[in-house]
Amino acid sequence: MTDARKVRILVAKPGLDGHDRGAKIIARALRDEGFEVIYTGLHQTPEMIVAAAVQEDVDGIGLSIMSGAHMTLFPAVIDLLKAQQADDVVVFGGGIIPDADIGALKVLGVREIFTPGATTKSIAQWVRGNVRPRG
Image (tube, rainbow, N blue to C red; front, side, top):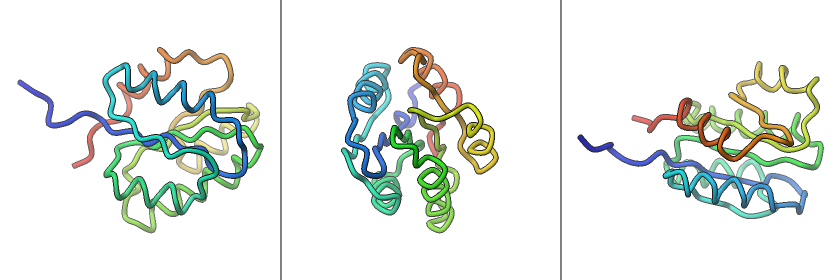
C-alpha cells in the first residue's frame, strides 16, 4: 500500500523580521523527515503566505516569527485561509512567543507553538501526528 501523496508543508517568515535561520533549519528538517516542504523566504505578508498555500495545495503552514508581531500575523493568516475556504490547512509556528500568548493563539486556531529549545525531531513528530493530506 502506498500513500496518496506526501504531506505538504509551507514554511514562511511573515512580517519584517529578517532572521530566517530557524525557519530554514525547520524547513530542511521537515524535508529530511520525508515531508514535501515549500519555503517562501523572508518578508512575506499574510496575503502572500495564504496565496502560496492555496496555489501549492499545502496541508500545513509553519510560521516563524521573531518580531513580536505574532498576535497580528497568526490571526491574519488564519482569517485569510478561512476567506479562501482553506481553513482545513493546519497552522503551527514558532519563534519568540511569550507563554502568555500561546493560549490565546490556540483559541484563534493556531494548532501548536514551538518555542526556543524545541527540537527539530519533536516538531517533525508533531507534524507527522497532526497534519494529514487534505482531501
